[in-house]
Image (cartoon, rainbow, N blue to C red):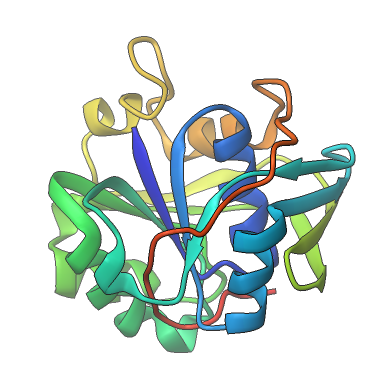
Length: 201
């Protein structure tokens, strides 16, 4: 399954990195060019409760260069949600959907206006992370997460990990937060491209 994380700040880097470590095809999209360049050059460095790992992952500031994905995870600042929704519309495949784990209110509704309510899942993550330097995120907390709203079909959500996978936002967030595969330490070459607003955190 292919993912695009729109807003690769601290939380976007954490979730994108965990997905990539588990073997999924992931592209991080952010406007902070120094961050993007460092990830493309050296990989994404996660530390804290994830362990000290360096993960090869694509990163870009040009959404136009991102190939179609199955799921766009939105982790921008709430003020940039509409811009992120337009970016998601460009990268999502025909059956793709968006998952927002943003802070603030109105994000699901804004995404629904652009993408259609049936293509939007919303939830709240109670995990925490801090971006300590370009391409370096520190995961500092892991707490239960919960559904805020679930507009997408559970069959779509289950595709995240295949048959028997999660069927709700809570399951997805919990799954993303746990180690699912050994870390990879190979250096990563230049990544694909994509844009929107800078990630929250």
